[in-house]
Amino acid sequence: MDSAQSKIPESVLDETLPSRVGAMENKPSLDKDYVYVKDRPSDTMSQQVESAYRPYSQTVSISTTEEWKKELMEDPKNRLALSALSANNASSILTQRSTVVADTQIFNTKISFEGAPITNQKSSGRCWLFAATNVFRVAIMKRYNLKEFELSQAYLFYWDKLEKANYFLEQILDTVEEDLEGRLIQALLASPVGDGGQWDMVANLVEKYGLVWIDSDFPTTTTAPYRLCHPAGPSLPLPGLLQCPKF
Image (cartoon, rainbow, N blue to C red):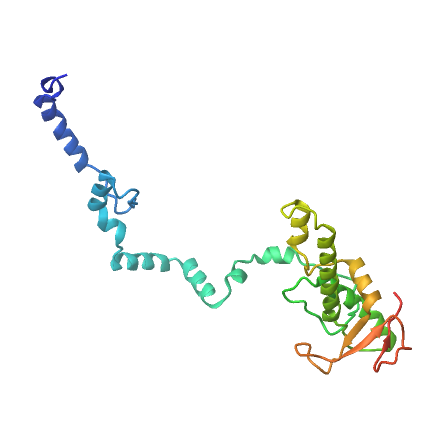
C-alpha cells in the first residue's frame, strides 16, 4: 500500500477535528470530584493530564481548609465529639454504655485470697514453675501460719536448664550417626533448652533438688538469701531448714 492510499483525506480531518476539540472543552472539571494519580512516568497521556491538572492534585488552599473547618464546627454533634476526644481516651468515649451494663458479671461466691505476695514471671516461659510454686506455698503458709511466703522459681529454673542441657547432649550422643539435616536432629536443635515445662517435669525437679524459699526482707532483683526446703526433712544439718509438706 503506497503513501497515497494510506493518507487520510483532508475533508475527514476537517469534520472530526472540531468535534474532538469541542469534546475536550466540555470536559468536566476535576477540582472537586477527582484527583489525578500518576501511574507511569513514561506514559505520554499521563504526563499531559498531570500537567493539565497539577494544581488540583498537589495543593489545597488555606481558604478551602477554613471552609471545611467552619462547616465541621457548625454541627453541634461535631463540637461535642471534638471536646470529648480532646480530654478523654478514645476507647472509653467509643464504648457503648448499654453494652457494658448488659455484660455486667455478678458473682455470689467469694474465693478467699491465697498466697502472697503476688508473683510475676514477666517476659519468660516460666509459667509452669510459677503456677507450681504458688500452689506449693499455700500448704506451707497454712501450716506455719504465714502471711507472706514465696518459693524461688529461679532455683527450679536453674536446675531445669541443667537437666535439659544434659538431656540434649545425651540425645546428640545417641544420634551421632543420624543425618545432620534429618528431621530428628533438626527437631533436637530447634529448642534444646527452652523455658517451657509441665507437671511431671516440676515434680521431678522438686523430688530431686527440693525447694528454696525467698527471704521477704530482701528484694528478688538482687542475690536474695534462700532457705532450703528438701523432702529429706529437718534431719539435714542446715540452718533455716523447712520440712516440705507432702502433697
